[in-house]
Length: 321
Image 1 (cartoon, rainbow, N blue to C red):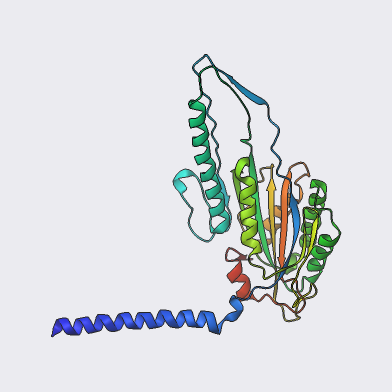
Image 2: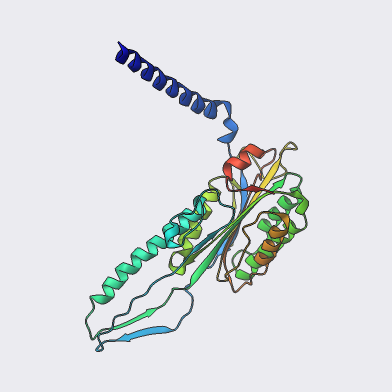
């Protein structure tokens, strides 16, 4: 009898837990549809991932030597949402940014082992001539949430996308400096921010940059304004056109993604003073050191809104100032 009562009690608890989980899922899907509806946005930037010049390395057989190449890299994360990934290997970070950088490094390590086995299997009198591409590339993702009254910054980004040359490093540097200058002139509109940095081998820099870019662009329902690497694209969205968002809009989100040869020491602290210094450091990147740039913002369509709960949901690593 006691076992039967205990069995019924356990069964009731499981049913109750199932109903609670089901109610949470139902409320998330149906009572808060705004979470699933992303606002449209804009995109501007370009990339120039060329193999860096380096002296040719030759290994002449006959001496019993073998050549192995290794890549060393690390990851620094600021304002991250959960503990370090694989701290035993020196990697730290959180969110999609840190994960993608970690995966790219793992891929390069695997390829280096494959290459080393290929070199070791060559004959002793062979000549190996390879161009070294072990230069590391710094990847930086700066995100900021602005009050919706920063519509002037939205307009500046739209004008840059329509009138800038995104096919050259000089043009990309100008876009970066103009964007940062617009932000520095409106510090009173800064509400949320986050900066994450990482270092990856050049061999995986482009693919990692593209993966992070896709992750950020997927947060947009459409790209109404786009100018990337000299290609200006018009959206086929017939419902929304670029323009001023709804007067009740609360926030504007801007993501600045950079690949550079320069190793910048950015602060992980989140306050106006440190954000100002970080932005000035980003603006100091020369055109020779700037490999790729992408600026993504939302909302961009007429009558659209980005409310606080939507901002936090889509950009979970943002920290309140």
